[in-house]
Structure formats: C-alpha cells, structure tokens
Image (cartoon, rainbow, N blue to C red):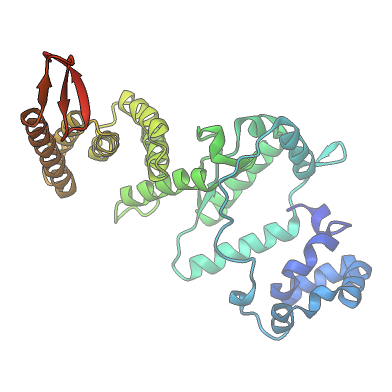
Length: 333
C-alpha cells in the first residue's frame, strides 16, 4: 500500500472495504485528505446498505466481514509477461517514479508489532514467493528500500524476516506474477511447518532451516503437493530430484511406494516400502502397506495358477483358451 492509494483517486476504490474497521484516528486522517471523495461515497453508494456494513457502523467485530479471514482458493495460473509488466507498473510506479512506502501503513505496522509483543507473541515476517519474471522487474530501488526497512524493524523490535520470494516453484504453482495459487500455498505451508518443527524450545526464532534445509526439501515438498492431487508423474519427477539432493527421508520412499502401488508396479512398491522401513523401522503405515502389497501379489499369483489349470488346449484350432483369465494364448504356450 502506497501514499497514492490512501490519498488520491485510488481511495474511492478501496475505502468502502476497510472504513468500518479503521480506528477513529486513521478514519479521521483519511477523511482529512479525501473528504470530498469519501463524503460522496457515503451519500451515493448503495454499498452501505449491505447488512454487514450497517452492523459494522456500530460494532468492530471483524468476523462479520465476508472478505476477511481464510484465503482465495484457486488452482489457476495466469502468469504472462504482459500481465506481470502491467502489475509491476501499477504496484511499484507512480508515473515514471518508484513509489514510496505509505507512512500510515508503517505507523500501523509498528503498532501491530508492539501489540503482539506486549501479549508475548513473537513476530516473524515472511516474504512469499513471486514468479522469477516478476522478481526481475521489481525496481532495484524498491528492493533496497524494503531491505533497509526490514533491517530497521529488526533493530527496533527484534523481529525476523524469512525471505521466500525467490523460492523455486513450477510455473503452474503461481496464480499470477506475485501470488502463489493453492498448489504454491501448499509448498509454502510445508516449508513453514518444517521450520516450526525444527525450532528448539530454547530458541524460538531459529532461521537455520532456511539456510541449510530449504533447497533440499523444496523438491520433496513440490512432489508431495503433486501427490496430494494425484499428479503422480509430476510427483515422481520431483521426488527423483529430491533424491538427487541426497534427501534421506522415509516419507520420500513411502510416497514413491504408494505411487508404484497405485500404478500396479507391485515389486517396485515393495522395494520402496522396504527402503522406508530401513530408514525408519517404526513407520507403521509403511509396514501395513508392505503387507497389503505382498498379499495382493500372492492373490495375483494364485489367480495365475488357477488360470493355467483351467486352460483348454485346442491344437487343431491353434490356440489355448483360458476362461478364468479371459484371454487367448497361442497353442503350445
């Protein structure tokens, strides 16, 4: 959010979404610079007759606001040079000049940090991934401004910033140039989960994961997202890359075993389940899957034997008919 979004023509597009939850001080500040626009909006817009808007005039309960909370679930990817360039122009430039940060946003961000820390909550900022074509177009001046600002927050409030902006993801994991979609969100969530699990109880803010393990785990996490949506070919490709990173992860072997089993490659599945148990002999689900696949192989072997016994050979006609297996073999086979 930049000054031009708060003090100018853009306020007309955004004010009605947030005016009902703004503190009085911020509300009056916006009114001071945009009185004509806001007053006209209040008088003429039917939007303010919406029930949740009316209720917000008398309450600050944000749970009644439909667009706050949760996330926008999308599996689409609309990354293109044209849309990315247009977005860069809109978000980072005011005419030919690079935008400055919003003083009002900085003010309330600081207030938020102080509030959270006063309640014993440790604050960590996360830069989420953006598409490489988008990142390359971000003005250098803005990147420098952002780095200086985060360093300032770090010194002033002892907060950390995790930078995942250059995390490597497949193109289809981006909704657009500067947002991941549902697939990308799955990878980011897995990284954050892995980081949280790596935190030592005595060291609540430990960014070592993002220095040593992030790139190693990334291909594995991409594979698990593909796997969860049954995109097995792409999942295997990512798991193979993860293996090349020397990732010794029982889940890696286990999921590869599941894919092999789903595709009917039972001997291959057994090999992966055995590797899983070699890595972690207490992996009960892998042991169960291994037993199930072995039983499937035994059943198939028994069916083959029954099929062979029920075959009727007819040398005169030149074939052997096997009714149980419902197929025909050449005579003498």
